[in-house]
Image (cartoon, rainbow, N blue to C red):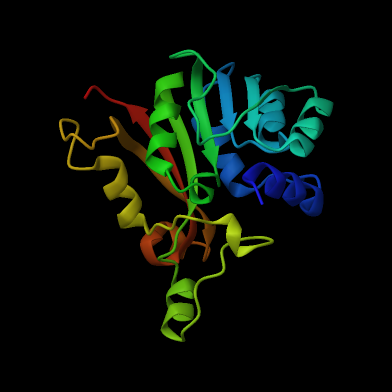
Length: 218
């Protein structure tokens, strides 16, 4: 089954997104009003619609699933149907900001996708990922079960990070290292997990992590 068929069926099974999740609020707090925003893997446009309403942003939703994009279009949003594993059909520095919210873990070549996000963003990239270092997942591994982080099928998630692993992937030896993504983490905040403890000890008590990444010279 192709990724396009899988995610078309996924969005049909999942239904329309609703509610203001904490990760959305964190991105709202970080993003500049009236920004042009590309929401990569933005699904049915729920977050994009919130950004448009609350921060007067100009969002575009890019996704592979036509079933999701139809919902986004019904929300009055601009959309692009494309795969994230290919070069994006978008010019360099086309958007003020790019969002990858709960998307990178669905992609085998996450580094390449981040590089493309950097290419089409003028300055910032906002990323959220599950934290495999969350204490519940550690306990599941201790008792011989792999952490369940997906919604419908294990096929959804292909990559996994702890807080330390994600930081290492982004830094990759520094800006002059040949594997460097040319990005730096300027802000990090927990968006799910044990309340209060997730901010004090995110590596263990945060179930989900939000990052504000900035382009740097290589």
